[in-house]
Length: 145
Image (cartoon, rainbow, N blue to C red; front, side):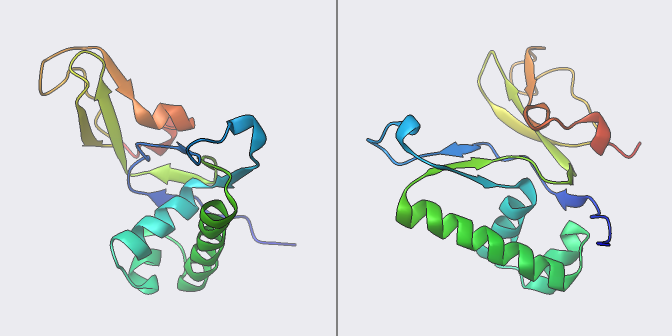
């Protein structure tokens, strides 16, 4: 029997979670799901340039698990780019360490620690905030306080 999967740490929710080729109707495309932990692996290895050992520590997983995860993520991303599909970032057994907040009034984005629940926008003082982690079904479950 396989060991249960631990929650992987993802720094911040993605600002964009759905991508498709221009000029092709979405209904004509297959969908590829890139899980949030695969998204984080791509961010850490390919955008931030971290080695597998350091990235694995940040995600709270082993180096070998990270290597398998990044391989899957790269294969899905290559499939999306080369064959054309809708790429959707969602799901996975994760917890966020930071949150991304959007103000509905001034449209600014700001990042907070997941344990801090902002009540107003630091730019315009509006209370009309969108909590991005909630788009992914997270928020309270990720808090440690």
